[in-house]
Image (cartoon, rainbow over all chains, first blue to last red; front, top):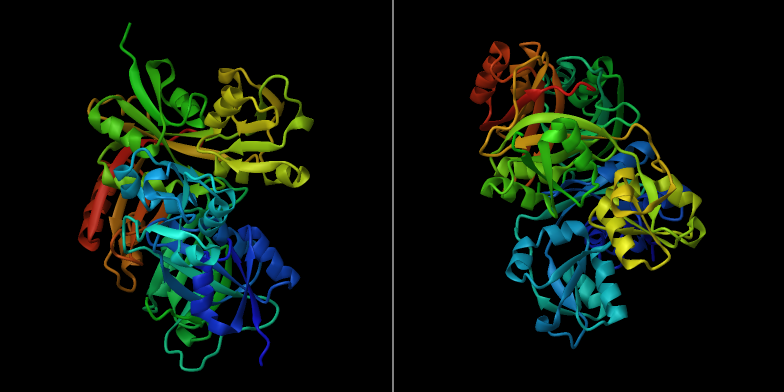
Amino acid sequence: VPKKVKVGFQGELGAFSQEAVRQLLGDRAAVVPVQRFEEVFRALKSGTIDAAVIPIENTLAGSVHENYDHLLQFDFRIVGETNVRIVHNLIAPPGVAFAKVKKVYSHPVALNQCLRFFADHPSVERVPFYDTAGSVKMVMEQRTGDAAAIASGVAAAIYGARILRRSIEDDRQNFTRFFLLNGKRRVLNTRDGVKTWKTSLVFATRNIPGALFRSLSAFSLRDLNLTKIESRPLRGKPWEYLFYVDVEGREDDPPVARALGHLGELADFIRVLGTYPKCASR
Amino acid sequence: VPKKVKVGFQGELGAFSQEAVRQLLGDRAAVVPVQRFEEVFRALKSGTIDAAVIPIENTLAGSVHENYDHLLQFDFRIVGETNVRIVHNLIAPPGVAFAKVKKVYSHPVALNQCLRFFADHPSVERVPFYDTAGSVKMVMEQRTGDAAAIASGVAAAIYGARILRRSIEDDRQNFTRFFLLNGKRRVLNTRDGVKTWKTSLVFATRNIPGALFRSLSAFSLRDLNLTKIESRPLRGKPWEYLFYVDVEGREDDPPVARALGHLGELADFIRVLGTYPKCASR
């Protein structure tokens, strides 16, 4: 029996990140829930986990900026991506009827993605909590009789709770993209059978007119497709920005490698965060 | 006596947004605190307020994405900007000594900007709350004897609370940029004495290689300076993006007007969100 890969993620058992781990590594993974994103990165650094799965953007809420910051601060390679369809369910302990629910706990992003449900039920109070699955765990422990949670169906099953309303999210086009990060030990990043790759990088430009335009020319003059660009504040330099870019192609494909060299001439700073198989559903 | 301008903002009295209102309109403003960002926009639409002040980005936390989404959905003009230096204080009811504090309530962004304080005081629990000033109001009402809040000094003064520790934020380079929005009645946007202007706009491109690069050429070929670019997910089209851009210059300056016309040819969609005097501290 091959040894399992210890994969850390933020949240409690049943979090959407756990579904991402399953999609990326299947049975090879032994999941390690961690409370905060920064702790996931620290665990990867200390070697207590072999790999990590972190959410990086949601089609409705946008990027998870904290993780972009951690990707820069820590120096781990992205070796995979996957997309998880987010389905939110209203979940309560057995015996709590829908009519009794007065408070609904969940992560603020999840609460904001179920606004129609709350508009239809104005007497129900939204209560921000640190985690979707964690809110199920909490309402199951406290059993106040009037509390419910919003989380995945898997979270309901794990904690023995009941689903009162299925799929209460406002928008079905709700996906979260996750990155798989390698620790010291290489756990993935095979070339076998992969046709399309992506490369993620971060760069900073001098704060002069046209600097971003010139930087992007490194890619567009080689007909390379940018699938994402994201700006983030540069710490310690108010109103200057870092740019996070995803480009189609493998880091060592000649056009990508040349574009990275060209960008190196134009930018103040550049770092490749990883190169990985493009997720099939993209 | 001229009639005061009713200016709505999200949060309780004493919120950082109230300082932004003061910087932008001084004594002309009568402040109207509103609980949620969307309600601020709705109040502006219904005419119960004359203008609104909303945070749009923070130098550490990045953009306030929800407000970018509201700017697109509602169709109000940005007529001003200002930057507020964010100073976080630990605040408790009179009589609560620092050694007694077990729980600290504040907005999640504020809690995340005081990580060094929490690392130095591991026995103190962070509790996310909907608002910084609102957390002062709440600890003053509840008086549990072990609760404190993180908020502005003004919030402490308004609610009669005491500052236990001043300026506990990790990074002094902490500024939030606010937009002033016009309702039906024009409240601002004079040309008098203003030398430098900015124009904010949003556009979407076809999802083809180089589309963003070509779109930015409308500005860079005219030597116009982009001070910000931000991508946001396009609702209903997973993995496609809108771009929010700030460019130096007034909307009706010939080079800016020509760039907007050129961008109109290249982009699928374009809307100018406003043109306004550039904030002096930028």
